[in-house]
Amino acid sequence: QLAPVRLLRAVVGTRDDVYIRWVVRSGLLGPICEAFHRSLQPLSLGGGAVVSAVLALLEYIRSENLRMLVDHVCRRHEGILLQHVRRFKAIQSLFLQHQRNVEEATSHDR
Image (cartoon, rainbow, N blue to C red):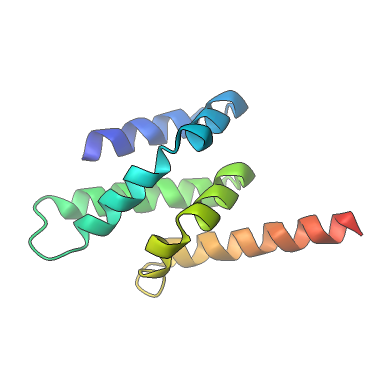
């Protein structure tokens, strides 16, 4: 479960718009978010490494403000992430970044 998260982090780390659009279109973040959620359940062997890797990926997406991915994660995977928003600062920060991006986009549209 850890290798796909690390691979996706490497792909996102290229900051290439073609790769980022491909990640969004192919829905690769869905299984990653589901693995994150499963890893937080009791009796999850090796779950700590997966949780840590997913949080690092989400933090990278937020810190680099990869707008397409911030929007995609916060809209499409909101249900899973909101279950854990109080527990992890990286998820809280991601939703705050999404809110800022939305507010900025609406202020530019005026």
